[in-house]
Image (tube, rainbow, N blue to C red):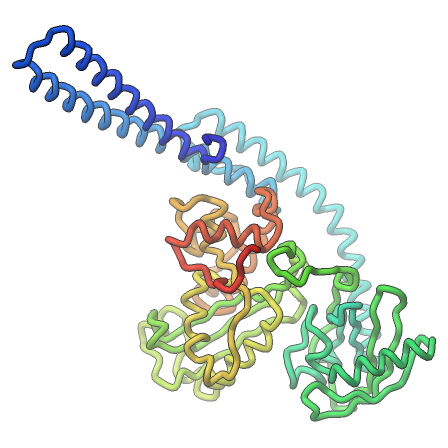
Length: 474
């Protein structure tokens, strides 16, 4: 039984057993004395003495537990969490000795060890940086080459999810939905037409096929060349670009998407294999049932990396004056949102940006409440799976630690400049960096899949409600 308890719970159980055992010994001694003396008139005194001794033992054990918890158990838990964080992430510095100052030389030794680990990581990073610089130069050259070619390019994996697109394609297809890595190609081209074209390509035995394809919304017809990329590699679409079209973004790609096979049940999918949209909102106040959104900031994360250029920074017209106290926090003024879209339009843009992704937010119930309230006017349901960094922090560091964004940012050594704090995009970036550092820490605890993490998050529902009510382990 004790093996299932955490260290602090074990110490509480130890002192509880000590108290029970001591009280049992006192009560047993008094009962034995009463049976031997057989003095009826002394029995009330024995009972009083027993009660006083029991309360004294309880008080003393409780006091000793509080002292031990504050000076030993909690510092050990903090020291363990700090070491796990540095072992699993790219945090470089040694451990602050104030985290567990009562542990003396143990804290100093842990700090020295993590500092040495950080130095080793820095040396390894220097080697990686040299190779990365060369790869980035090649990527920039690829971008320049593709930008000069008057054709839009989209590469698609065997599961019909996009693994590469260029700026031309983004400019031409974004009018339907946000074009992003991991999105299904059928969101942009009619599924029936495209599957028929792919069947024709396969039947001809050729590597390319010219075909006209209708867009998913039926509004446009493209002259597309289909390219067969080989067994289990998917296919590529290229189509002419109008003269006025200019690249909106560089080439964006992740070729691992071509070989990744995901389970249909998200509970069984590894955290690293999921696509995430990390987001934050700024509002006119703190009442989701009455206040309104004034800004949405969001970023797409694919393969545990920020997808280049896939950022949403949207002002929203709340349809009412923004209180001065709210502007003092986030800096959004009435003048800034005069020409901004209302929540119905902005909400649809966010929904398009976040489709097929797991939403990640800090205190997600607050932000999601605004979208759920306006779901009818937006015209869509926000039923994405959700991860909350408040609950993830509780899983990693315990429910008794602080879990504000500022506290987590400081604990994980994430940069959050004051000038972007309480802006939607600034807080979303900080939440993204926090979340990406949490993933290897969760994996180190054996929490590898979405289902593993969901089970642990629900153990901390006293902090915040879990928003994944429709997802349950079979």
